[in-house]
Every structure is written in C-alpha cells, then in structure tokens.
Amino acid sequence: MSMKSGLTLGIFTCLITAGCGANDAPAPVAEPDTSPPAVTYEPKPVEGRTTIKPTSPIRISYRIIGEPIVGQPLAVDLQFESTLGGKAFDVEYRINDTTALSLPEAQAKRVTIAPAASEKVAAQQVRVVPLREGRLFLNVAAEVETDAGTISSVTAVPIDVGAQARKPEANGVVTTDEQGELIRTLPGRTD
Image (tube, rainbow, N blue to C red):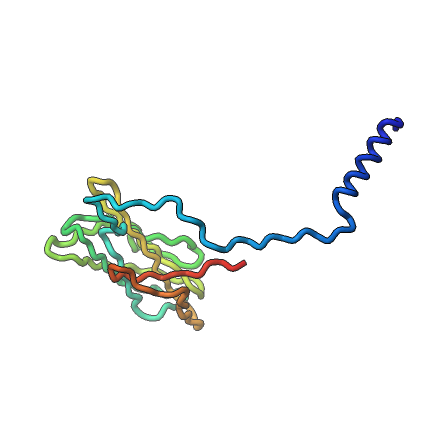
C-alpha cells in the first residue's frame, strides 16, 4: 500500500468514526403517523347515474339432507332463484380436493336448467360421497349468457363430516347502511 493510499484510508476512517458519533446517544426514532391520509380526490355524483352493487341474476341456496358419513352418498338440495324469467342457465358441480369428496359416476357434472317462465325458483339435487372427515366443499357454479356476456354465480357448499361439528365464528362488526343492507366491518391488522 502506498503512502498516499494509506493516508487517504486513515482520513476516511477518521471521518466515518467522527461522523457516526460513536459516543453520541442514538437518534430518536420518529413515531409513525397513524392519522388518516388527507382526501385529495372525492368523486362527485353524476346526475342521472346511480351507484348499484353488482349482483348475479341467479342466487344459489342449499340444504344438506341427512348426516354426512365417510363413504356414504350424501344428497344436497339446491335451489336456484333466477331474475331472468324462463331463460335457461348452466350449472356445474366442481370439487377441488378429490381426495376429500367425490361425485358418483352417475352424477352429472354439468346440467342445463330451464325454469318455467312463471316460476322464479328451480330445484336440483346433487349427490356427493365424502372420502374423509373434516370440512369439505362442493362448488356450485351457475352461468347464463346475456347480451352483455356471461354472468356467473358461484357458491361453496360446506359439508362437515365427522364427530367434530364446527360452529361458524362471527368476525367483525355488523352494521346497516343507508339502503338497509347489512355490512360486516372486519378489523385491520395490528402488527
């Protein structure tokens, strides 16, 4: 190492040591700002337009018939409430974990339902076979073709198999908005 490099390295080391304040107390840490941010843009209502919540024209409800037992076929009654009158729609039954639940070979995986024009509700029954204990899910998807494209509604039917029945746990706080709709507010993370 040359004399010039050694001198430069020595000065650099002194500056770093002096600049770091090795003997000084640590600098105070600023508290995080927890106040809500200032609103910089707030959309104005446009005359002639209303805000609507997107909903599917087909509502799916279900009822499990009997006690779910491993290896035994289980019937699930489904009801499809349609706002489209007598327009036909497709229903598909899906199982994500085929080691937990299966559809018997005789059970169709996809059907077309054409409700009577005078009726809003159509019924269908599907059979499944639980293959293990626990909470299993049958996914039911209803799709309808419209002028605007395909609209779908999907429901996961929970099937509790075994002695350990699960109780649903309520999270958050339920309130009502101006239109009378129920709103569940979930707490944010605190960590």
